[in-house]
Amino acid sequence: YDGIKPKMFQAGDFVYIVYQDDLNGYSENYDMYNYQKIVYQTYNTKTGEFSKVYVLDDNGFADGSFEVYYDGEDAVIVYTQLNKKITTDNVDNMEGYVASLEVKTAVLTAGEFMVSSSVLTNDQYYDMSVQVGKVNGVITAIWVKNEANTLFGTTDNNDMSIWFSVYNGENWSEAACLKSGINTITDIEIGSKGVVYITDVNNDLTSIGSDKTTEGYSDRQITVLDMTGSVLLHTSEEAAYHDVSYFADEIVYYIENNLYSIDTKEAYFDAAI
Image (cartoon, rainbow, N blue to C red; front, side, top):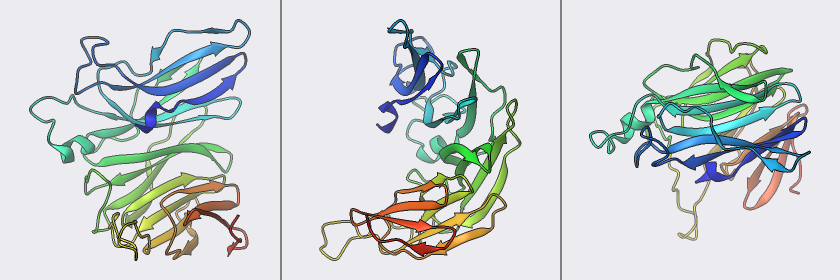
């Protein structure tokens, strides 16, 4: 799964390597249902030695997706985690599974990641697609809340909303809603001035293309928000693939394997790269 791919940064003489691992049997807290955990280790560039592997949040609950951010001063991890154990009694309840995912944070303190004592969410909805970065000079976490609690994140009742929290160097702010009433969000990214996301208007992630063999993406829309929730850009880019990135004033995305960009200052499309 995607979490196996490590996310790394260097702070001083140490390279931090963060990834997900299978901890089934690691201790009595982990079994065949509760095993996916975020772990990390360090590499000392002076001695050439690796540290032991640390479990980020060793509480027995399975972890979901995560993102890492380091700005040269603060290093944070934003991640999702189940708020209950998976058992033989509830393992087939997919709606209940995703609804139990909450957003948590950890901050690098004296060389070790310390999990924050409070969670950013405490609800019965699918909190997903966490991102973290600097917006307007402030470390900001964003995520999508899917009140439909569907496993693949689809909804046709405008049940999705975008939430955020900011970090002041000591604490995270109370979570706030940036925008609500959104249909299926296929991708979301954080940028230096706001958030960009792609929605699938008809909520059908398996739309078939004209050749009847490949997926068709004829219903994508790209929206850019500032951190007040105001729309900076909204365009119907019908062929936009569900993969978008936001760099400063530029958004890049894929159409039929070609890379395109939007300049948010001028709000025009650049040629394919």
